Image 1 (spheres, rainbow, N blue to C red):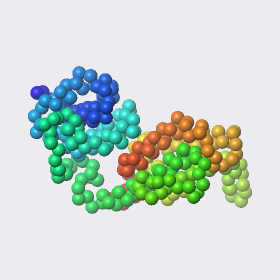
Image 2: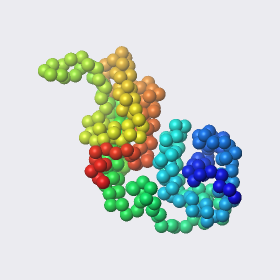
Image 3: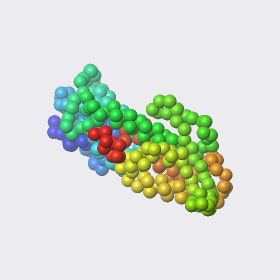
Length: 271
């Protein structure tokens, strides 16, 4: 049977269909014809099992998700998180009744992400760095929900233990030797030593994240200045603002995934 697409297209179709996307939705997301989607699925079901198994390998799935699927504008962050959890066994069992899952040794490929390869000596240090960044991201996400938290109120962290996040609004700042009126909103996460490194990673993966964050802070300052000078109060309007929802969705993605794209100065020192 003639192969109906390149390897990446076949993998992407299988991943999206496994995520319960319709054939029409898959065709639109990947900008290909529906007939091609149908042909690819037919090929996966009908091609000799050994050929299909040779294509559907975990590191290839992860690579196409990181390199291609994550760059498609129409992909929802939640779908990316779900896709990252898919294993080759899942897809093969979905399409092939003649497939029997078995424990297989991890396979290496030079082009795969280095931290996905077994035996990498710096993987543990990266994991620790990402976990610390993840906790800062959690604190920011909590603050962006505009809760009425006290400093003692902590929530469970995806990385173990608990984490605290908050926000505050002030009409005056101390500059030089005197206080001047200069309304400002501040998130507790911004006090963390890893704040600038988190922003570097977020902006690498989502270009414009820093600009959008600053713009939203301006929106928040404008609202709080007009509505009340009370600091650290719950604000549903700011919580549900479209720009805020997008910021939190991107934070949610990296928190759930547990890895960060791009590179900061700390990452460079780990190599």
